[in-house]
Image (cartoon, rainbow, N blue to C red; front, top):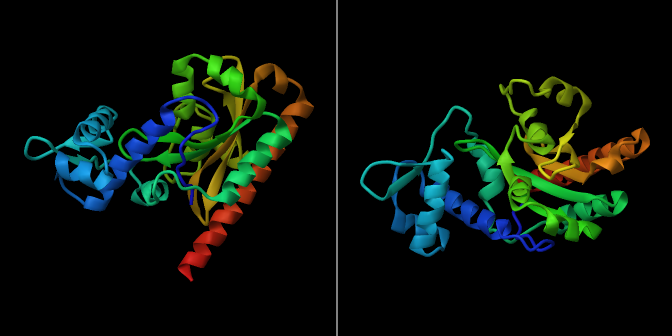
Length: 260
């Protein structure tokens, strides 16, 4: 499965923020249905109570968590769009662990294209999001450092309909539609292309599967000027789709071994 990892390639605090967010969500999932006291959530998430409270409130603002019952009690929001199985795909491992095989595929994609490669997982509680859980930036570290902070935050975490990576995931979910989003074309072609959250950058993404379950998306982002030519764009599309197929094979084989 896609395993969350702490970001190291760029000095950006989103990695630790994502880790704490997922720790809170994992705690609520493990505690089960119904509201739970903040102190219990914090202890299960292995976070100080004030820190857990800050992240619980942020999740509540996003609609992923709600305050219910006695004061200071919280629960996961139940919505028709929520997929517990996919939440498990993201949160059932300790943050900071990663698959060397998936990491190798991501680094290979970066090396093959010379662009930034990213691995995303979906978070389908409340407002559906995609989180960046690993990345390989190569020679683009300085460019990312210089990017607007707001754009970087959207690159690390954004709604599913915000860019190619999210749309690649959204196109794989049963019964979903997004007005104005070319989901049928993405399903037919097997990939999505569109503007990146980074100004003047483009994104190419393809879904990653674990058996028949969409587990996330792998994406490549590059300066738009470097993807203007048809040959360069096609080469990058093929590289992304090859990586997505390899990752899907790795995840599916892992699932079969665990099932056995």
